[in-house]
Length: 124
Image 1 (cartoon, rainbow, N blue to C red):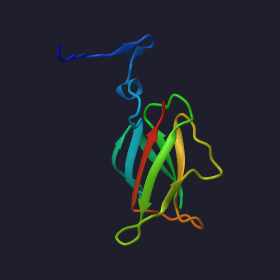
Image 2 (cartoon, one colour; image 1 turned 60 degrees about the horizontal axis):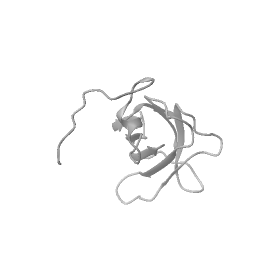
Image 3 (cartoon, rainbow, N blue to C red; image 1 turned 180 degrees about the vertical axis):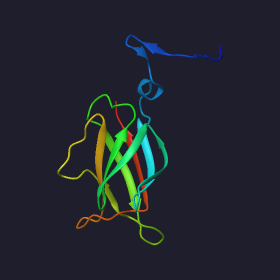
């Protein structure tokens, strides 16, 4: 028997169950932003803002908190045409929290502001 199930609101015992929290294996947050000059978000999901902490050092602020701080971040960054492969990682001075993740962009030896930064966050 084939059919479709349409639900206007999906609830759990604590209230409305947000779509991203009700599904496993999908990004719980993502953002694409310009990290040069005044930081500007080009597109995002569950990201309220980006804080520029200095050269190549950013904090991604979540609209809805992660269920715990044991999430996975995947990302890429580059400065423009012909300059690819810059890394995105957690700075050693900061641990992820449920409300935000601090990331760094650059090479293994120096932080660099990047024009194209893309980050996805996955959590249970």
